[in-house]
Image (cartoon, rainbow over all chains, first blue to last red; front, top):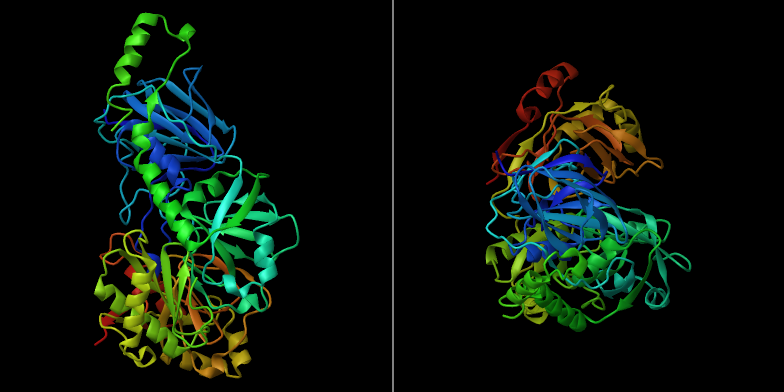
Length: 337
Length: 247
């Protein structure tokens, strides 16, 4: 029997996502990949394996079964999850025994949850990635009845967790000036960094709309701007003056004026802001943004070292003595270098 | 952000924290597009460490790089040196380009807005078909959908406006026209441009050595075929499109 994750029921926005497929911008194909790259890295760290593809679940999960015993990790937006009816901790790894039923319900905060598997998903790559690019029609959503191939798992640890910084209810997004910032008036640029915004209902893998508390944004003659390249995080002003933060599956070029760009470290916070979440933007210099980027990469590289054993409630553990042995053992080679 | 106070092109601007853009104009012009394509070919040839990807769009060349491995100052200095090395507006287009011939039905039920476009251009339908089927246009950029080209520039007579309303849907393979440009649709989509021709081209084919039929700088002709010929081409690989290498 081949290693596979069987999908019995699927929410409307399930797809396999990895770090996307760079290198095709000049042909009109954006990189795509997971909306919350940090959640992808957290899943890999919990399973002690390189970053690969995970199942991205927008808003709602599904019902799953492992064809063979399998390790899983649950990261990103917290969702109600149970294993044969028993609640499962989020931001943690677990054993999913063959035949057991994994139920993943709606998000309790945030927007995108991720299900990673030990050994990683092993579906065929298209142009070097497993990611579905829904906008471009490369691959498609994962639907009920799917049987997703899973690679060989070389690891064995489960029952581990990560402490994760809150990023699932909006907050402050740091932005840098970009291509067309100077086209906007000084007053608009200043107001952008001061007022509050609310995440609109309209959001998908292409972009997230945010409504300003005050009036809309725009530039004189903004509709005749020559099309220029789009980077994820670019904040585009469309006709009604409400900003769109462009995300993983944005188009590669666009002619609407763009006010600023959200830095990569804050894109997970954009992706995870649920409808109605309050957001602010804060201008930072390029120098500061590069320092933040260095810290962000360091944080991702250190995730594996931050993984720690789940400390159970004494009532859940039949034998306190063995529990002590387990925790003593676990502190050995995972906490420090 | 840099160079926005400059008045003369080319200008260099940052894009996010990991992109730099060299622009040769602020509106679509033949020379600026040619410069962007030629400059991008040179950047790709240089293969600088730290540069992960480059692309050309209508009037600009974009570089995505790792700013922690290659500093903004260093990359900008290299780009300035490359800009100064020649007059890019006079540059030849790079080698390795292709000339494509994509059979096209003009007008009729398959391309219902030919008459409207011809009349906007002040031409008879027959004269419009003759001009469009003999025109040789360049892929100025690809975008909107994977492998979907913007092509130009057509003769000045084709400087016709977009429609005021959107056509809700044109089929995959539709050839649409506005402001001296053509777009060949890779997917079924709405458009404000006029649907003058229909092709059976496959712009994106997985499994091919180069999955995208067209690249920036390629040239394309849309020779006219009858509806009967077109029906046969629908079932042939690539919709009857052929290409040859440009010297």
